[in-house]
Image (tube, rainbow, N blue to C red; front, side):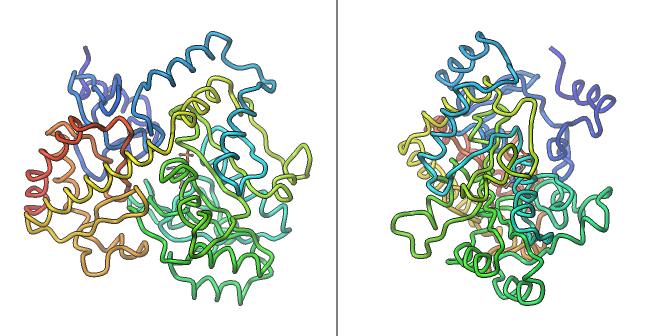
Length: 437
Ligand code: PMP
């Protein structure tokens, strides 16, 4: 079989950087990325036949682990009926009902194929609904690669230390106001000055693309209050957190929980990743009054040849059906266990750090123990150089971590004791490598 090194060399001649999504190229951690050929449960196998415990989980979708038998069976059955019809199919309503049954803030849903499409449509819809142009986003939040939201974006934009993106016009950039995360005074001030022009505030439900950052208590509820008071909409981006941080996403865990200290209802929510269980599904949903501004009912246009694709819907339906409360209890417990072990290993090696946590999502930041990471400035000021050696020590020991310090670590219901033991055994040496960096 061809090795990962040979496959990477071949890919580099064919695709920019040898990849179809930038962070996969290992730019910030260095080295040759393993090319994966199969996955099962919590494990991935690369082209060299090496097996890894996977802590990327396809960047979120693999909530149930790889190749979950019932998800595969549902996909196989759908494939046998044909791949795509360009007409409505029953599975679209089935998935929509599953989403609405879990997330009460969703009164109408529109399926798309990627998170980028979901947020792009949500922004267009907010503009169409309010008749206003400006959008507020927070530095370090990533909402996909739509032009208007690439300024100070997290994820690969942060990993590659880019200010934004070439190819975005000044006119487009001027329609986005970028504010520091967790800073309500900045939001109040922006509305005081330009409130009549602001169509929406878009925020990650809990940021996880500058590493994980917890919203300060009441932050999201305050955004809902401020937007409502000013005739603007709140777009709550749950592409990453949705159906991962809990049965009803991060909203269900916080503002939408029955016992919430700071209840609120977002106008629009975006979903992706887990909703498709590994196939290209994303969606936007929210208040019927707003959603009904979408074509064909309303004047805001949006469409997709493969939207609601029957095979992808089957994967989503099967994934959500098996994403039970027990699955979240398991992932919550594994997350607590792993983050505690990482912290212990780093402390034992004398590495200053903070565990960044929001629900069951977590990441590690270096040199940040004093105050943790509260915003993008904190995330950028950390000792990011310690992550590369840590990452490679883990990789050498057969643990596949996200290849960037600005990404969350992802677990699944398939991460059992055997998989966890392999991760835990690798931590002390990785912590020493981080200390020596
Ligand atoms: N929003 C958030 C919060 C995300 O994390 C991502 C992707 N990581 C996106 C939007 C974009 O989704 P996609 O990559 O499917 O376009």
